[in-house]
Amino acid sequence: MEFTEAYKHSGPCCFSPNSRFLAVAVDYRLVIRDIHSLKVVHLFSCVDKISFIEWALDSEYILCGLYKRPMIQAWSLTQPEWTCKIDEGPAGISYARWSPDSRHILTTSDFQLRLTVWSLVNTACIHLQWPKHAFRGVSFTRDGKFVAICTRHDCKDYINLLSCHTWEIMGAFAVLIYSPDGRCLFKYQAYESGLGIKSVSWSPCGQLLAVGSYDQVLRVLNHLTWKIFAEFTHLSTVRAPCYAAVFKEVDEPLQLDMSELCLTDDFMRGESEGHFRVRYEVMEVPITIPFQKPPADKPNPKQGVGLISWSCDSQYICTRNDSMPTVLWIWDIHHLELAAFLVQKDPIRAAAWDPTCTRLVLCTGSSHLYMWTPLGAYCVNTPLPQFCITDLKWNSNGSCLLLKDKDSFCCAAVPIMAESTDYSSDD
Image 1 (cartoon, rainbow, N blue to C red):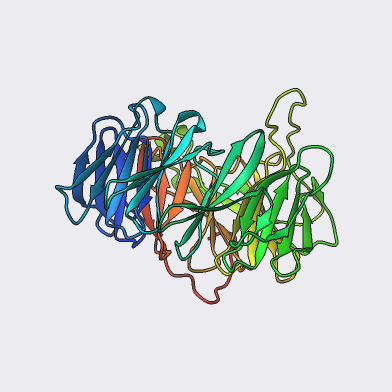
Image 2: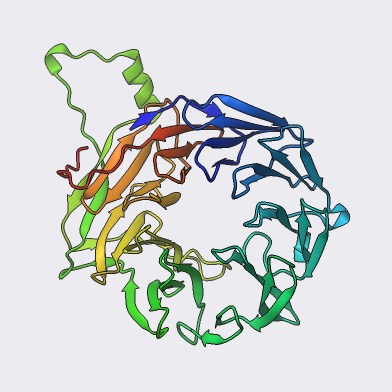
């Protein structure tokens, strides 16, 4: 992998959908960089510090959330002199997003009082009362014709189905699994007592639904019968028979030639800053997983399946059980078994699948990047001093990774994954 130098950021950074540009917030400024050279191609000045940015699907427009104002500003890359400003006044703005047609902006007011659709075509606006969430609970169909919005009123949750052409409500249903025409397809409840569902994710093929619960079990349903055909339990001890590959992060022992020992300033500085080499060690079962028991007297316990992510081919799911934050589990849906799990030294901050092939990347807030493929797993050390990876994102064609530290970022050019290679845990 080839890494760029580090550049400053103050929070949000994201690739454009067409993978040509990278948008970076630096306090009041929105910096648009070319993805290949990272040269600045546009520079926009906002009226306050940027809290959030999002590209329109056509990569022509980009919006900035100035939530301290609260206000939204939008910019055009093809017409730099064009600008748009949205101010909700006393209602405030807690979140904003683009519609699939790239010509409407949806904003959620403070305290979820209303969701507003703003048109960039005719400056019209439409209100929907009582959205349930500020930044979640809105989902568009793949063709962009309809949107489902979660609302809550009279102490009940509902799904409102709207047309993205007229933005009129076509129907409202209680929270179950529905088809767009309002037919109830399935009602699911993992179990009757205790905390229930924590996370839900559709597979990219649209035929499988993964449901993670607080009981530390991942359940997978199919879209034809809506029956559970797979249950995966996150065990605190994994024993035989288990054929999953187990990779444990360990420190790489230093290889020193004592006859010509010389500790350079760079070496000593790297050790003092906590930069050292690590590698994966292949372990044998049985193996005990590090487990953190959440306190029983606090709300929102850190337990259950809090992270679910599908590979692009819908064959694998990676999960993190929040009471085992240092372990990433990878399940094989074709064989209905655990394919591998990675035991890290630190809690997992983020994990993301390559959008073009079966390659998974994760970070833990260290100076290392971790990758898994069906052929094995390996650790990559970032060459930048004092750079700790706290978040990461792929661009749309899988050629580049955005790596974020607290106040800086870099990009890494990722080689195309070969069809078959010899695996070595020392890579």
